[in-house]
Image (cartoon, rainbow, N blue to C red; front, side, top):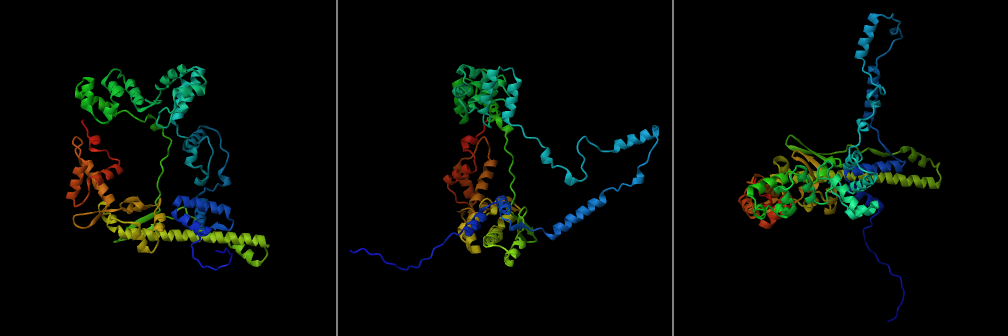
Length: 479
């Protein structure tokens, strides 16, 4: 067979992901805070993109400035005059000083000039700072301070020592026999139980701090902590040769100990969620409103467009201006398209979950991405991106958009009930159970079947574990 080269025309069609299309997809799945960062960065990098200032905002600022000027007291020159010194004059000065609010710091004429309260706050003390302060306030030698600083530096946020004694001795270039005495002294620091190497040692430190050496509590922690976790109280009582009530009392005491003593000095700040969508009920209808707070109104600077049209620029400058104009216009269109898409998805969710908004979680209906995609004429992948890390404030509370999408379970009446609704029913059943006689998963399944929900025992187990609820043996309480 002869080999030869020849030209051939072939027509194909394929989807090309342009940089602009990639940017639009990226903006679609960003949270509102992340979108603010992207816009802020683009404002810094693109000189043709600028923020629009509303006329009402300018008028409001001007009116506030005029009101402040009118509120300032006018001082007349003739108000100052010499007075003779005497008892009356001194009394006048005393009354003036009593009514005069002064401070030793700076004086500010308006609220805008005052520093924000955030600048006056001090840094929250950490567990590391608290332990180092106790170390340097104690009676330690220089070598012991070096060892103590190394030990404290290896304590995690929960208060546990995450380095072995050999590693500490190597790091400090000292003998291993010098590390243990320093560790034992640090374990006496506040909070009680700190610098422990495992859970058993942490609880033992707290028990001995309360003077329980040789008690049933210490014996349980030394030899039967696994049995304590599985609540084998009778076996513990039999092995220790004590009454069952003593074991129950000891277990209750141990339950009051703190397994993570360092968490009270946790440095993590609370992260508050700001909703992307607000749902308001007006009369008998629900209105969807997007949260545009913090998102500036963008526009292209007209000065550069006019300069480009005048022909006063060279080719390189004109090419640069054209590129930046296209980038700014595409960003503005992408943000507008993003907002419209989110609004459509939110309206569709409200349409499908109206009974939930009216009555609560018991009426949450099964919903999948395909339902919303077909309703608004978009692809499922687009719906998935829109519902990622976005929250909706509803009359029933704040929920992530993905919360409204869940599978369904059949009922004896031929309908379907949402899995989230079934989880909530399981949680309510367990909350109302007798802690001395907790319900098994099979019993919960039978109770749900009595509520027309067809569910298997293994499904109850799966939902219970998703709710982070222990089994019946783990939930059982003896006291």
